[in-house]
Length: 85
Image (cartoon, rainbow, N blue to C red; front, side, top):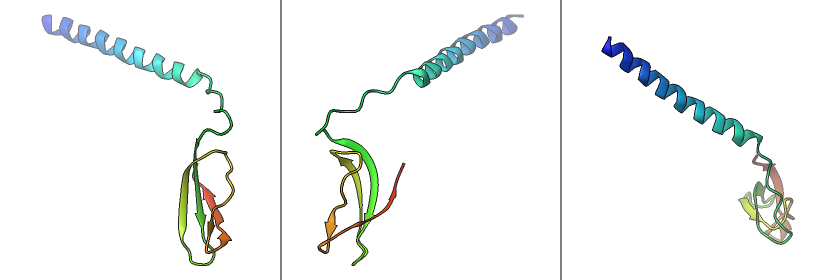
């Protein structure tokens, strides 16, 4: 009898814990996205470039614009491989 009461109490505590976590996750998914940063501030990006002459690869992770111009290597613009999203 005492064991059943303890298991019931532990079940209620676990139920409350899971309920709180579930509500927190749902509230996190419904929040709006923050506005984009002002022009000139660094933004997080993930873009890879490759030099067509020598094959050197470069990954950009921060840039002032969402679509930065390609960097130069071997005196030529590097080719965009693929954005990593």
